[in-house]
Length: 261
Image (cartoon, rainbow, N blue to C red):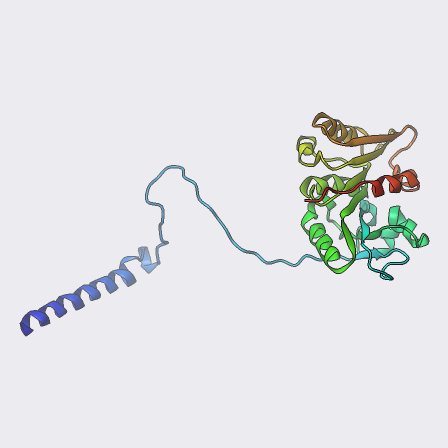
């Protein structure tokens, strides 16, 4: 009996030795190189999934305007996100005040919106910065008294492209959008057909052709969207000055409210 047990143990030890030898040496290729593990058991085309968590920092500087009376009592305020043009990119926030709502809010302290005006870094492009803009809005909504049913979006030139792109990617966030002399992807208009849009463009724009706005507006109309287009017959690329000086734009914004979920 004891002899049989010893023989069994000897065989187990021998098997372990052989397995160890194969593991350390048998998996090596020419010149002792370790061969890569192979998980595919058969040839041909098949589906796979790659997933990797990558942490990255999102950052930007921005102007924040709080209306006169903010914080004096419990009250939620409408919020406007403004995206500037390509000429105002960089790291000098004073450039963001050159046009549009930040310029107006600098002098008009009763401007009736919380106004968020981020600055796009040099060499970046607003339509490629949607992730950063979305997270910025999340942060503002969390820290300030924002009426989430009245969040509005507008932008000019590069910012007009950014506005079209952002309302395409985040339609559930905005109560209305006003892109100025920009363009988007008409094939995706269905995604934000429920967001009221008022677009603006100059008929003589030789930087961004007016057809860029027309194509987006026509696509929205085709899928039943709430959209209108104002074309200034004599305006060139600067169609934003007249637009942002028009009180009707702000009255229109304030009439729009996102439906409660």
